[in-house]
Amino acid sequence: MTIVIDCLGQRCPLPVIALAKRLPTVAVGDVLRVLADDPAAANDIPAWCRMRGQEYVGGHTVNGAPAFDVRRTS
Amino acid sequence: MRSGYLDAASSAPLHPVAREAWAAALTDGWADPARLYTQARRARQLLDAARATTAECLGVRPDELTFCASGTQAAHLAIEGARRGRRRESVVHSAVEHSAVLHAAALGPAVEVPVDRLGRVDLAAWSAAIDPETAVAALMSANHEVGTVQPVADAAAVCAAHGVPLYVDAAQSLGRMPVPPGWSLLTGSAHKWGGPPGVGLLVVRKGTRWRRPGPADEREPGRDLPSIVAAAASLRAVLAEAGAEDTRLRALVDRIRAVVALIPDVEVIGDPDDRLPHLVTFSCLYIDGEALLHALDRRGFAVSSGSSCTSSTLHPSHVLVAMGALSHGNVRVSLHRETTPDDVDGFLAALPEVVAGLRKEAGV
Image (cartoon, rainbow over the protein chains, first blue to last red):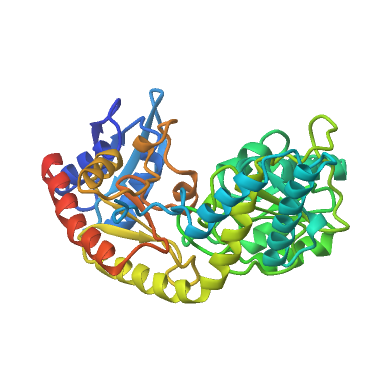
């Protein structure tokens, strides 16, 4: 299951803060998709996953917006 | 009031020897050194002595050294001059070079070589990128944002095997650490070691094919004689102190690294050991870099940041991105000869409170 949070228009670190707040509410194994167009998001979302031991699934584009998928592993 | 100034990597406070030499040269060296009368000869002698001193400090010949108006200008001349001299266009460079080098490289075809998590260039990729058609390959001596020392000697060996000149941007290491041999072009910037702003160095080793870009002009690009004299005098003074300063500043940086790592969700970035003596960088999760800089400034601490919100382009530092390091909440601390243990302790006492306060405001 994939849950989407819309952080378009938000500047870093706000998308990462939103990710950190929301991920504990999804089930382990589920994917949280962060829509974020701040230029730092593509770097900082994978970096957050590495620091917090969560799985960065990858980045892609959804309806023209940059999207970053994170799977809760613990 | 300089005790909280912790941004030597942007510009080190002026060394007292530089101040004295500058004032003396302004008195004696105001005339045009190219003219033939007494006042001009005095200026010429000062310039020749400054060149000889600087060349000796760098271990090069005086006629291999060109004074420039800035480190940026020196970097541009190094790369564009190599392209012209070798009649080739392609520039190979690490992904973490200074923006002055990247801008010059981007004037033509360029190949970027990735770095590892510590910011060190991938030597296998470096080897694969360089071929005899490469105009010049650029690898800095040590990184200006994270302090990691680059494998210059190994990179030079690859270049030599292909007959390609190696350009080393040594802006952050000159006066602090020796540059390994094997390079063909080298640049530096006086205000990074405690000299005055507005003096760059360009060294082109004998036998390197290099042609000065721009209009043909016999005038040296660096024209500010008092500042050049001050740069030379301060470089010699700084080198005389370098061994003791290396030990002292490494210990202070080690302390910063250890204490900062105790703050929750902070990542210390760059090689912990094979690094510049005076510089350390870390990123704090959930913190806006601009807010962090302003909060530290209000407490009297001047530091720099690679976070996107602190840059004019609103893009994160290309160095941090190339390393895959967290880019928001980023702080670079760089020490200098006037930094005391008390200054460092004051910073380390203030930082956890500032970080906790900003996180509370952000609701995390």
